[in-house]
Image (cartoon, rainbow, N blue to C red; front, side, top):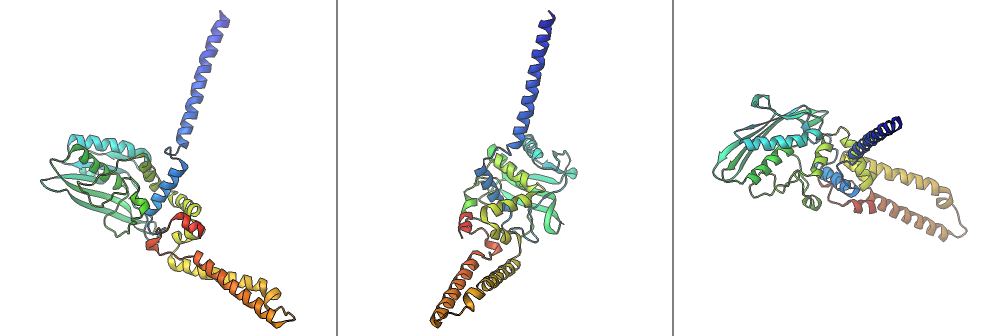
Length: 329
């Protein structure tokens, strides 16, 4: 009898232990999936972040805007369905960013207000942002977002939800009162992301993408304190170190580095070739002339091709070239 009881207790404990081990392994594997993106999808995601949010590279004054404090949403003159839908969106957003995200019942307690205005015709959009400068960047700390949306009564519920979702999500990174260049590359136009609408003004004819898993990756990374380091690693691995310098530094500084590099290469080659080629005397003078001529021509061609590789990119057209082309050059 005792043996039977011990065996049953051992069996139960074994099952519990296996269950605990399973849960630990499952939770670890879940945390390591990184949004369940494949390596190819991750590269696509980082390329999207680079082109969409860093069109000028690590600009001295520009950095993607975001909230640095709690985000409190509030809807004015919306329907109960609007509030319920927004609450569901908030549940998706809250785990992705370090700021606490919630819906508040009073407008005076909110810093992200979406107001619906009755309209009989086309949709209108009034967007006002209050933002401060942070860490030396211009208007990158969002303090308050205020959207006023005029949507016709006959607008379908699906379209209304698309617009509400678009505003609620993209408003976490968007600032309306600064002039930021946008890249409209073929790559970006092929992406189906809520962060890259085909038109930048709300429009009833626009088919806005849903908030997809890859969009959650974008939002999470944009709020990550190590964003610049991770993006820099991607740029170096995909485009090469020289393009990374263009992405990171000012054009004038990159140009200075380029000419200094060419000058040092010239001095190094001249130093190596000085005795065996330049001052070496052959019995026949024509051999001296030919050797020096071949050396000078080869050196000129070498410096020419190196100067092509060490291209100084215009910050307004950083992504007018593919990663593979940069690596090949």
